[in-house]
Length: 308
DNA sequence: GCGTCCAGGTCTACC
DNA sequence: GGTAGACCTGGACGC
Image (cartoon, rainbow, N blue to C red; front, top):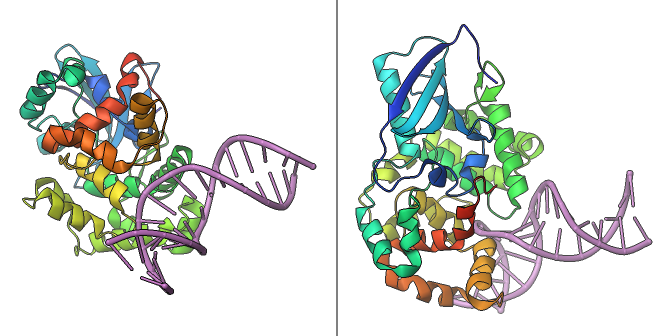
């Protein structure tokens, strides 16, 4: 645990919007169990090593507070005001605090089946500080078990990330990932056939040929943006649909084997149904359908303090 | 302990 | 445009 007397500590508080739950956001999907995110279940904290734009590493520890989110930021030196601002900006982005969901909350409030989403403080899906990290992780979820995804991401951070005293690691930069050989990726990261896709993607980002961070504020239509995301080798329909959710676009259901089985269990007694049937059922929710679908599939997590 | 089979998305080649 | 097979790993299972 990276505590040290020589460490500079900054404490602050982030105000949160209406209809927000810290833990419902942390457990909105599996990202909180992939490093650099770590949930400390004993101290009820979310921890994460942040890499600032000037290269400074900041170990952030977040707790739920009555006034919002309480942050303890540990760093090798006292943070400047611009560094403190960047820490807060990265965390605000992770928690989607600046995303306007008023229309979404109005839609779910009108729908008896979905009303619980607003009242439970759900609606904001946790994401990484960068689109690069979200996409790399998304690629690591394809065609494998969740356990293997955790192994790949763990290896990416410990073997390619920056180390902070105390044994925690940041997520690797595009340049660091781009410098890897395929053999290294296969042997050390265990990313298998995804290795060439990951390296190629990192090279495009590191060289500036592909600006994925711009996707969060892109004015492209959702269909156009979906196609652009699909242009990354290794990202198919499922991964692109899921990534779009983390970009604030919710038109796609991002069907994978887990949600297909879950939908069949909830609505058809476990009997398999076609993707078209699922899509038809959520058509009425318009551009919010992907978000409402996801929360309906994970509603049973609501009753668990730590769903996973 | 070893071998075999299977699940999991995406890409590519082929029809 | 649709489909089959390959890709790779961990886990389950049988021996």
